[in-house]
Image (cartoon, rainbow, N blue to C red; front, side, top):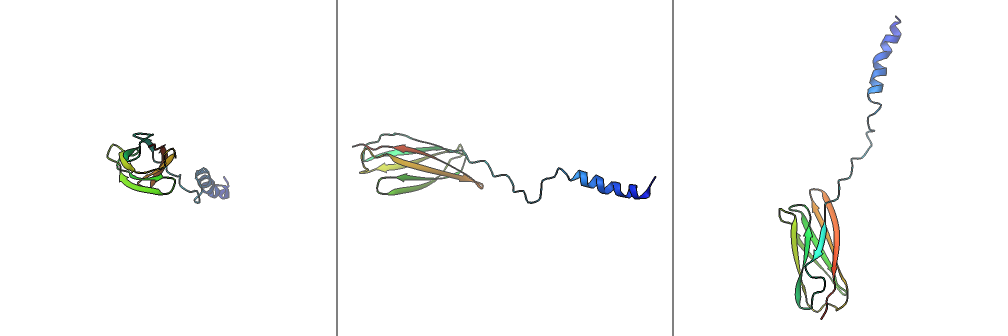
Length: 124
């Protein structure tokens, strides 16, 4: 047997073993978004009443809501309970009747985040 041929075998085997490996520059997969679902306790509240944004997400997640009124935005922060529920009250003072108020919700926990939205329309 040829001694030069035997010396080349380990290098060929080593090359084949790493042929299927991912390149070192490949970035890790982006984490899945955190679940987020928002709804209103009342979608047509009267002025001068309180309406709740009801959020479902991961347990103990940070919850930030923003109600986008016609002339201003109101932000509130809460933490979801262990079951992933958060209730964020908004007092509806003299909001513009018939103007759809969008409420955006952002949730985060452990490097993951998610978002959702809901809305309500005040009336007199």
